[in-house]
Image (cartoon, rainbow, N blue to C red):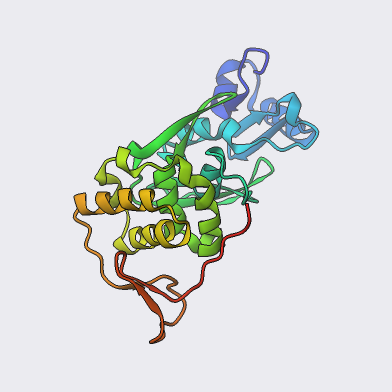
Length: 259
């Protein structure tokens, strides 16, 4: 298949390409190729021929096959969180796994093609707010910087807490322009996520312009702010400061890593 320019194929495509081969012979061939590392199978009946540059490690990066896999599974998707941030240059907090958000279907996370693939299901994905990144095999969907920032705050427990989120945002901020996106984006998030992001941009990172843009977008979307704690899992004491603009009760001190 690679000779024909096909580095990714399904079992049904293999059978169609070689109709004279019996099921048993095809199965034996696939088993042999998997055993010697010529191909990997990140999903059942889905195969990737390992490019020469990855053969030594035997690990194929998910972006090499991800778009084709998600089309095979019939899923809307995008690369998210730390992996998306890294693609926009925020690489200080390099992720140890690969996170993908998918729409509707419940798919199992696990080691896929040598990489830990974390798959988070969402009822509805904001597909109007993704970017297309070119890869060796085509394109992949990646959350825009604005969507990535909101996702990081909304999934802060999955990425190591708000301090790590703030450190990533410090690098990502120069790519964030809330003035250029539709207020429809905010409808995919609960108000406390927006408030916490606004607070981090404003009070922690001193990105007042970015914070102002988010605040204006929130008003446009008619988002109503109520008093919420910065850290949800920590108690609020009487001496906690209140950020009046974002209505954030500051019950955690955020100190970002040196970049």
